[in-house]
Image (cartoon, rainbow, N blue to C red):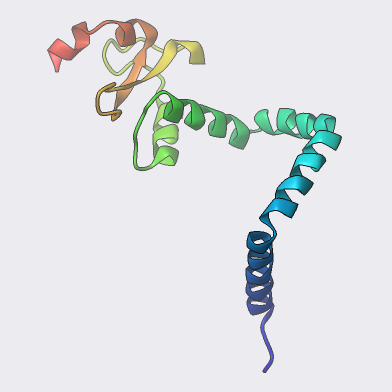
Length: 129
């Protein structure tokens, strides 16, 4: 029986996964030592990654999750956030990313809209809805 390259890759991946599960302590010790010996290398890689569009996106989404935001498609939400150029309430144009806030319900965690910093700190706009 001849295996395709994809089948070989899958089998190898499964063998590696089983080995890692069987040798968890050994793997953890190796990773700990690697991180200790390569601190500078890892820090440099992280610094470079954080400057890439994917790194920025990852940090932004991570921040949303930490603040309690709940959404079924964070990629689509990030796209909406990036493409929004004005406050959804007062229509103020965002000149910097600092002025842009992703508003969410703190009880349910659900996204509501993209607001300017002023509208986000005041509840007057909720009465208009």
